[in-house]
Amino acid sequence: MLQDIAPHAYAVEFKEKSPKEGDRLLCYAGGRLLAKDGEELDFPCVTDLPEAMESSRYLFSIDGTAYFLYQGDALSEQPGLCWRELSDLRAATPMWRVFAAMTGAHLWRWYDSHRVCGRCGKPLTHSHTERALVCRDCGITLYPQIAPALIIAVTDGDKLLLTRYADRPYKRFALIAGYNEIGESLEDTLRQEVREEVGLKVANFRYYKSQPWPFTDTLLMGFYCDVEGEREARPDGQELAEARWFSRSELPADERQSVSLTQEMIEVFRQGREPR
Image 1 (cartoon, rainbow, N blue to C red):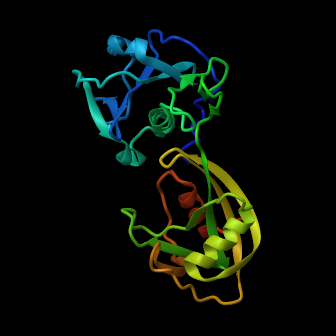
Image 2: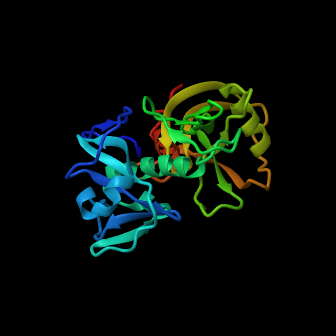
Image 3: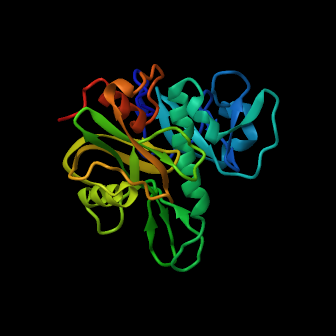
């Protein structure tokens, strides 16, 4: 999946440090990322954009190379660099650099949308001890936003329920998904999402694994569960346009690297390796 970048090593511990030669610079604007020209995704070094060094904030390191977020004024196009759409990066290579780009984008969106205090309207400042924003006037501390959400594989013996969205650009079959609401347990969210989206009851919840999904600033948690009672899926027509049962033999083998938790869970079911 996206975060599985071994043998590369990701280190996200908070530090205050200045960029040095060889470190990478992540520059975002309007849903785009400034990258090096070329087929493979790569990022400018801080020495490629010396004017950006003083307006950069340390984010994380990969294999000992530090990645900094540019937070200054808009940059003009530079020779050897081009702007790439973040929405297109799921298909880019190598995957570990896609992970770096989208993890940086997650933090960029948070910093960019939290410039003033929502309580008193005064400017927010950076904490010197942790990754947080602080209002010196009223004392509130804000941390990066991560929304918890479920990926739900509903099974019926050797059949898996796949759905198709009604109004999203993504048109391939997927699993049921939904955000955890305030006051809900994960189990409550699972039951509620399945009931609302396809009109089914489920039981025997089995946790699979989690995935940080920086495309939507989300922490995904994957569960398998069994349908209970009525088997006829009735998509709600608003979020889902279609819901169909597929046997293992009907699920096509996916030879691509699984970028998302959804892709991996479908493939795991096809191979009969899902938790029982």
